[in-house]
Image (cartoon, rainbow, N blue to C red; front, side, top):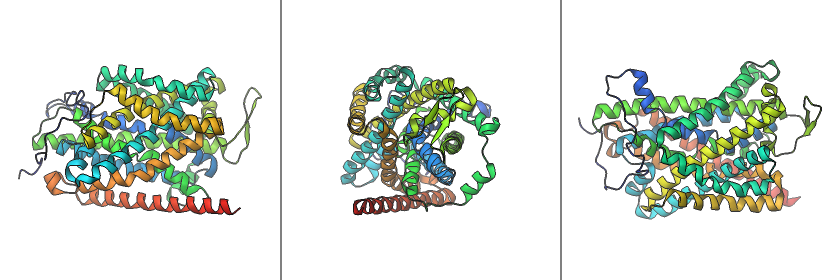
Length: 460
């Protein structure tokens, strides 16, 4: 049976062509770990989008406002993300097309414009989170006013160009160090330090008892889902798996699928642990409190802008000064690495949907300008306290855009016409379609909740 890899409908230049097939893979006889390390990386790169400033903001807001009640959303959205990212990697490996290319080739011609525009809106919304996170980090590190810090983030194109010119493996190594640092700090606080150790029984109860009963919970829940299951990551992952130079025969494809499944599961499980830890520690530090006394006697009064006070979640481990420094550095690195993946995703969707090619630095400037403008306007009008609201809103935009990426992905990967014998099996197909329906229902529920709240507010 030779249905494993149908020929592409049209021959086009691959997305990210400078990185395409640039990472060699060992022979099948090589040890397991050597093969795994060769294939590992694409999901790790994608997982940074699951730990970017937008995630930090929604997790902090969830923990500070509702304690552990939204922990089930973090767990569910992480499981949904694993399912969808596995499907995205399968599409790229089997068809040699990323999701944008497949959508252009397999969907009606008129759909490319709305799909491309919605993808660009999602990327701009995500980049707003990177802008604001990086700006907060610069503000904490150098005491620069937040408005000017936002402007400074426009110059991160220099970092992007230097990293991309050095190859895919350096980008992946940079991200690995970031993930390890953040995960290490939060895991120590939760599992080692008595002062910040949570009630694991209460956490378990929150995970198995889903609820959205309190006002505002649905809105934050959509933000968490949008920050975790990010639409542009589906496009990006299906392109990144093609950076490995595996062969096109059936056994090589099966091997690539196996190791990409492991890569996706491991990387996104780590991302879940980090997100859950941020929410839990925010609950411990902020929930039910209006202020906290620091060891030096200073009292910090909480507002609603949790992202600027989130360094306090690391204070029990490192002390206030070191916590502020490490948090700012990690937040800056998170924003910058998210910028790298966002720019790569922008290249993928623009080349895939429209067959337009643009130099990376120009692509970076266009995306960053679209993200900076609303951030500057909002901060100028509402002040520094608007940062967390902007971050949460950007993630809600991502959540609402998700169905436009999810449904085509599932249709393609479940199709034997497109995937041959590698079409999704019954379990992956059932899980994937269930995820699509659940996220769409949550979007509709949250939008209704927002509209009802707005109407009530206008009535008063």
